[in-house]
Length: 217
Image (cartoon, rainbow, N blue to C red; front, side, top):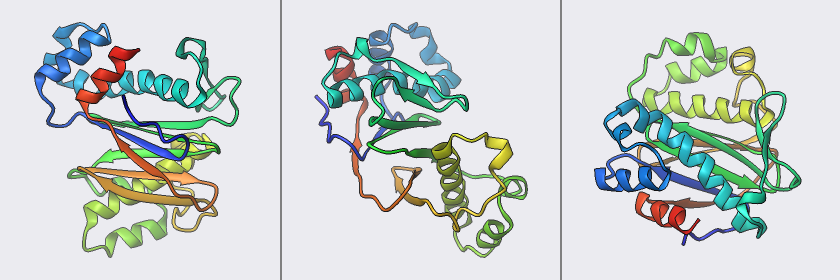
């Protein structure tokens, strides 16, 4: 059983370097064809999305003390998900290669995760504000700085539920009225955006524990 610490919690599931047997077990529990385990794109891209959808139902049902089958998830006009009939249960989900993160809160939240990796810094010419590009160009740790800026911007956009391409370069994420906290976790860069100062718990869920959770449900 995973420990649910009520609200203001960041849940992290990282599939990197897990065993094939654990993946096979998870696929079986999720009623997914085992042949997909040979498809790298499925494991990297699709599996985190499937797990995110199932896990948020489990988390919400535990916190709200209701049956997961009674929960109805909808999306607002901008595509941001919310839970019908529970306006004080706020959440946001983000996926990256082999990982998914979920943040649950009593108030509006945006979250983003990226796996830290080599990147073409020219992307910043299109998506970063002028001031952000200056910070990036002067950084001695450009990869870390790039992903800090990128995830901060994504979490900010997801907080508001705005369109990605319409707003991404239009603001300097270091000059916003919102509070954004960024941290690293086992090769992941994670940013959380909320309306004011906040503290939060981190709950890492191993694939073994995830399999137990899904078996319970």
